[in-house]
Image (cartoon, rainbow, N blue to C red; front, side, top):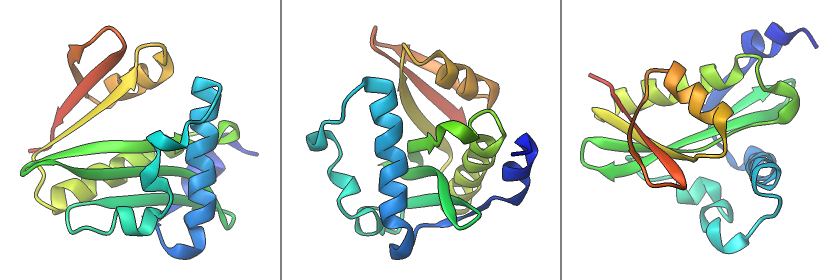
Amino acid sequence: MNPNEASERIQIHRITEPFEEQARAVVLKGLEERFGFIDPKYNPDLKSIVLSYSGQRAVFLVGIYKDRVICTGAVSMEALSVGRVERMSVLKEYRRTGVAKGMIHSLESWAKENGYQQLVLETNNDWQSSIDFYKNRRYSIYLNDGKCSHFVKELV
């Protein structure tokens, strides 16, 4: 695969039922790679992604490349003007190709269009590649609780 091909040809859009199973698999595969196991009790939103993120102030996006979900990302409401980025995941073979940049850009654009002024997120301190990714996208750490780094980005 040409490293830039996926990022140039990826189609990012709101999840629909035909892509729900693939999206669930992408998220769970990423969690298993990071944690070494999957605990279903921490992932109730993945039982029905379409339903879980169907609210007016929430979105779950999928990145489709060659009819396959290769990345995911979501925004949910944290507070009236604050959205929470979650469920960012990219299949291992597509990492470092630019698809995550496309996904976070799409999530930020959606958040702005839907009235959010800030986005927050958190990632484990052990996941240096994720920390670097968000820092490079101008997210700032506002809290490190010893286990996770908590980020914020102003959208206005």
